[in-house]
Length: 79
Image (cartoon, rainbow, N blue to C red; front, side, top):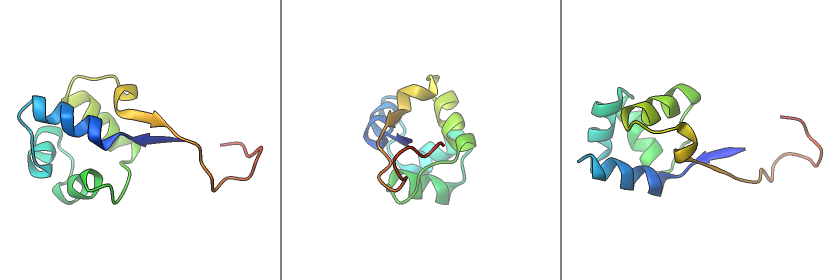
């Protein structure tokens, strides 16, 4: 499972002058309320939003994501 590294996104966005969720939303085209929830770590972006974030900041999507263990899946489960 992968999760957005919000701290990394905030750092990269700030380098581009985007210090608020509103600024990130305007640059990326993501809905403003979604940007607030994503940057507030209340939700994870869907694939489309993650790709929009990566594209807006000229990044490979893997730069923004971290692999994490999913504790909710039973051992041996196939994703």
